[in-house]
Image (cartoon, rainbow, N blue to C red; front, top):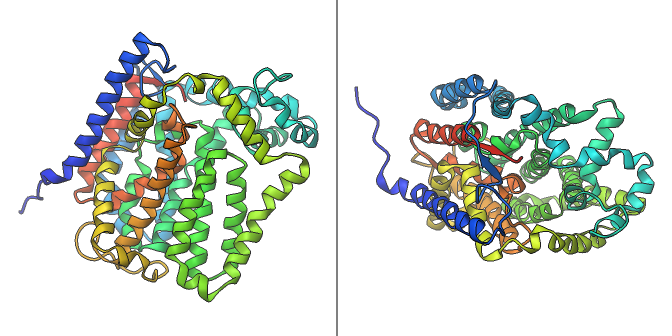
Length: 466
């Protein structure tokens, strides 16, 4: 029997560099917090406290990790495509639920959206929804009459309105809100797989599937509204990918609708325009052939903004007032010089060492054949990845371009200064697309084990704030 080759040392360069970034962020952050008290996080760079613990979700989390590491790559390669998507969603939900329940039902699921993200606290102020939307911007700035809590003020009203509508249909309280975010948020991995298959090829999507399921990001996908935001944004990209490879205007219209909703869930997710632009570049051949695709996209995109504007909410005014509110709070105190690079350390923890290695491979794939990324996608499915674990052909270059667009959007968010700290949660929508770069890795079980160990350690050694 021949033994599998060991991981080459060069494959470890990027993960080691990423680990050093996290270590430096911890040490420097600890010093700043102890001496200046300006970071407003207890375990920098993460919004968490040191609290080793076990919980009811521990056995399930460990069991799922072992099963996914052992059988995930083989199943992802062999299952029929639709069965793979369904299995990925189910496994991602199980992984998120088990990690959330390590902290218990109240602390890990039901209480988070009530005590931390505050959306459920203001449901009573939306008894008249049109009036609340018309008056929304009057309560954003601190010092205004009856100001919104920080997270409500920090997002367009689409975020809060989601939980108001859940309450109206009888799904009241933190438990139902948490279940909504986990159930919908777990579909983000399915959306990424759909997009990768459409724009690159099925082989690369299958290789990425176990990494999207067993992501360390699941620690924060549990009972966080950002999990819901991530899924909406991911499906907007996935539908656009289907439109530009299949030629139908209906997915384009659906994509526009979801992109519009995304902008009214989080101001920062307007940066998904960078990823959308990459998809349009990758599918430019079909877009030129079918101008109706762009028309459908724009028509769908106009729906949600038009509805909110007619209801009386001014998005641009809301954003300008949010900037004022941001600097009135801890955002005006947290040092930009630390967070502009420590935010990236948070992303390392959220996406794991495999993603660091995958991003390095992704950059290599794009640098070797930059022109290949502009070739026509085959629409889903052929091998096309070329030789090697991640492929060296046009499909690999197209996936690399998609990942590069997500990384660029994240970096723009970083340098903007509007995301200082807590980005392990805030940047979940971007992190899901970075995880797709793991399709380029060989020895998937080794990398999956590293991902699982990181997630389990973070969830059991730290009590995360989100």
